[in-house]
Length: 467
Ligand code: TYD
Ligand code: MG
Image (cartoon, rainbow, N blue to C red; front, side, top):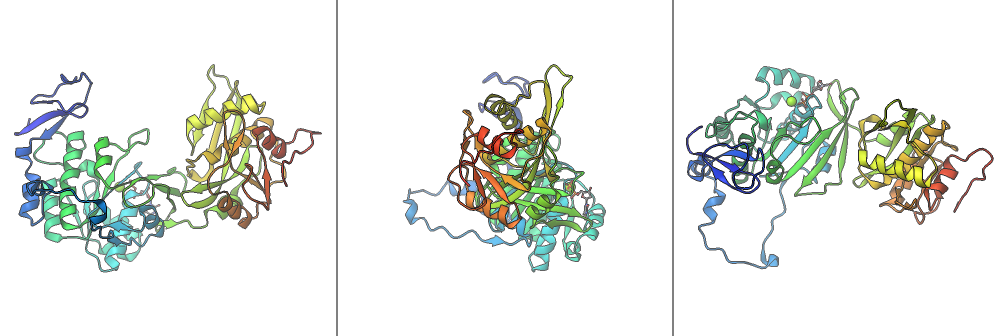
């Protein structure tokens, strides 16, 4: 063990000089993490020595509580990244002195995106710094050669020692900095390997102290685990101001950027990009593309979804096939698996379409993710259409709405924007819950009404609650 460290439990705070598999304090397993003792935490001293005010120093001054109204709050100063979709997700650009954690699977385009951001900032006359712990400077240059010429103007250090990086940051004094990635950095005070919980926590908190003291906007690139969660301790998510997730299928060109946490903006926004030969390109006409690509075959439905405050038309596809397994497969891509299970149960109970003996696959086309209740009806109609083997009638046709457990179709947010987007892209009619507006709407109060409209059985009258 390195000198002046202790092993602390992340659950109960118990501290011990030795590592234990099971915490003697609370009995939890694998919760002890190596930490630097306060006396050994040279970070604060380092920040003070570099001219910054360490947060610890402030505690000495006597504090008097004030009414919030008397607190002068300066508006957050932002650096526009030049990438509209990213700026929108961030809530208007990078905030000075803030820490943004950017997570995503390997090869999704995190380094490409961050290199483009710094390139644009350099072009606007800002001081930037790219710290690469993962790749050599030559490797990063090879990538930058594929991007816009400004990407090559970004200063880089290929380094993994935290102490060396803090020194460079203090000396170079950038306005924006990228650390690629936080899991590769190593603090000499701790014995743990780079990427271990203790190391990641120490690295992030020391960088944060310097960033806050000097007003540097920092993007920490982070790895994700196999099941898609951000690797490293959850405490990292608590520590940073903003957590961004970069998602998509590697085989498909579309990439989606979402804010999971944002102290300076909304977490509803999502940005869509396409990976091309010259880097990431913003996709501003997503609806037009997805509607044009929609197959209109049995199992295909267009969903009028909301991506934050932006309406977007996406194609939801389903495949229902007889299963040879005792427990048939339920595969959801681009939406929550539990949501699919719920919709299948409602479809069986209130729509008369049972899928008990069949494998069900549902996919939101293009690698897009829809995380909103408004997708329920689209999933139900896609599965019903695939199960019966007939396409939706009166195609092109869109839909949206949440399904209740009693089979009712429920109102969801922003119906007027969804309908406008559908009309703009030539969808003749949209099946929607009641009270969503007029013009091009086919209202349905229940799942069975929606099914009767979308997939009328031969000879069955089309039920229209409202035209
Ligand atoms: P990268 O940014 O290295 O991903 P990450 O940092 O998330 O691991 O990007 C990896 C992929 O992007 C790689 O497979 C090549 C591809 N790519 C392009 O298609 N076009 C480009 O212009 C660039 C720079 C990368
Ligand atoms: Mg990378």
